[in-house]
Length: 70
Image (spheres, rainbow, N blue to C red):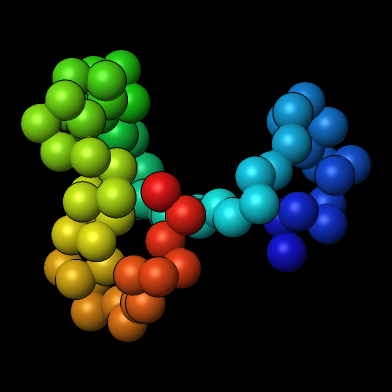
């Protein structure tokens, strides 16, 4: 678990009560960088919670909406 490897992430300020982690392939690097740069614009159209639910559904991930800390 990443949270328990603090020696490797010593510059990271800390974890929230709940968190998620997603992987991307190196081929998507530029797309991901551009997404992060423009994330504030993106979330004016769609909330973080809406986007998270969309991602889960697109990838067939089961979830219980009661536990989404958003």
